[in-house]
Length: 262
Image (tube, rainbow, N blue to C red; front, top):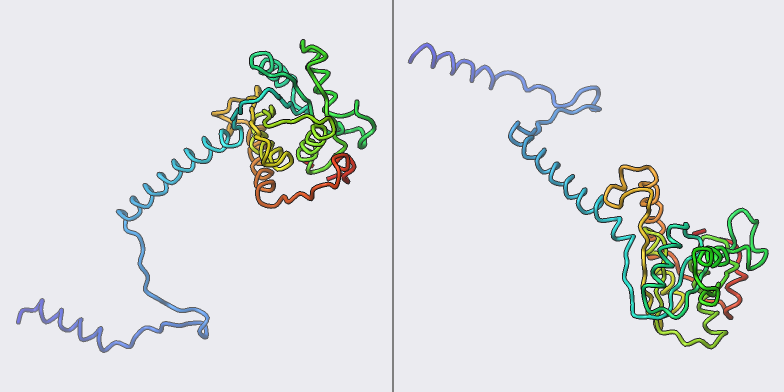
C-alpha cells in the first residue's frame, strides 16, 4: 500500500474516531445545522427571475393602472353630465364634447364648495360653479341645467348622482342612458358610483379628460401623479368593495345626508 493511501486511511479513521462536534451551544439556545446556499449559477438565475418580475410589474402596474382608472367608454345618449368640480381645462373639453356630438342637454352636478362650511344655497355648490364656467366658455344659457347636492362628505360623488336621479324623477324626465364627464383617474370610480345611484335601468357611459399637468404615460415621474394614482386607486377599491349605500326614502333626502369625503 502506498504512503498516500495509508495517510488517507489514517485521516478517515481519525475523523471517525474523533468526538462529534456539539450541535447545540449556550444551553441549547443556539443550534448548528447544515444548510444549502445558492451557487454563483443559482444566484445568476435568481437575479434574472427578479429582473423579469420587475419588468412585469412595470408593464402591468406602472403602465396599466392609469388607463385602468382613467377609462373612457361612451354610450349612445343625448344627455351629458359634467361633474362641476373639474378644472377649467376639463370644462372646455366638456363644452367641446357637447358641441361635437348629438346631445340635447347638459347637466352639472356637485355639492357645497369646500371652505364654505357646508350647504348655504344652490349657488354655493360645484354644480353652480360648473354651469357658470360652461356659460363663460360659450355654452348657451338654456342648454345647461345645474343639479346641486347638499352632500358634503366622503360620498360626495354618490350624493351628486342621487341628486341627479331625483331631479329626473321629480321632473318626469325619462332617461335611458347618460355620459358622465370627469377628470382623468376619477373616471372609473365616478362611473361605478353613478351606476349604483342611477340603477340598472340607466346605462352610464364615462368620459375621462386627461390631466394637463403631467403625461399619462409618465405619471410616476411626478409627485402629483403618484399622489393621484395612490389616492384614486384606494378610493376605487373602497367604492367597489366596501361602499354599500343606503337608499334615501325620497330623492330630496339625499340633500340632507350628514357630512362624510370623496
